[in-house]
Image: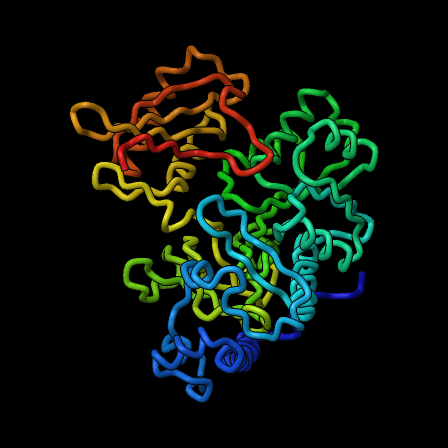
Length: 430
């Protein structure tokens, strides 16, 4: 395939010039198109003429999920309704959903940079891509499919769930790539092995979205299916949807599309920039988005910028996988804990599987207690329980600074899901 979807810039200087032009356009477009943005910018004393350098970004006010919910159902709309060709909504389960509108240019841009994801993963026109992601009002299914078709590979729009159908499609259509949540990937890997059909399929790559996946889970899926590569694809409804970046075949971080949005990493408490390489909250500003532009939107996702240039040679910068969300933080005995930290600890211990649950209780003595349920790895016998229980408890104490009661379970004991797996069960009085 000769067509490329990569940006037509070769240096950081060219990229920053493009970003500045996009920032100027976005601020002007939002100011003149959205009464809400105009009020925010006026209150901050910043107008379109104020943007002269990229450093002026720090003068702009923040937007948040609250702004989207307050103006439901068509928040921060910056174009006339006749220019809107589609809408999508978030998969949130509490309160009003976040609804986003799209112009045709927004759809075209989204399709373009999603096709870039497949190019970054080094797919070929001969690849057959099984899309086990949700369709409908959500942003996943249609975007995975649009990008795949624009890239030139064959889309198999299977949708989520239905393991019988998924396995049948893998065998009948000889799919080479599968797109799904990490939890669905684990479910499929175990099901393929349970059915003994590994030698009847040609799956070589998986692209994961929607949830964080631990190293242990990824290694398990890769080993069970004999995959060449697993890729992480970030995205959120507010920022178009999935496809806003991808790790390359070197897997040293997620290349994000800095020609479509500016990414800041800020301390959640102070909103001050953190040094490159340190963890903070992702804050995004779009550069070409028409219907609902984002100006310093607080995503609540936690990650870090990865310094230096990737060995693949791409000019596009990288951020790490998502550690968690700033609003998912657990406060346990005055210690701030993110589920991703537990992922990290458990992934470094041999003999246990990738699935776990954190259960928090408050007992009659008024103190909080943590129970950590962890599966043994496949083939590991329960005579190793004392050794593994001690090791897990020691590492949790050493790395996260809390004590937990560890319960080891047989492989496959914890529930699997084709969607996001629930990891934390907080039974304490709120």
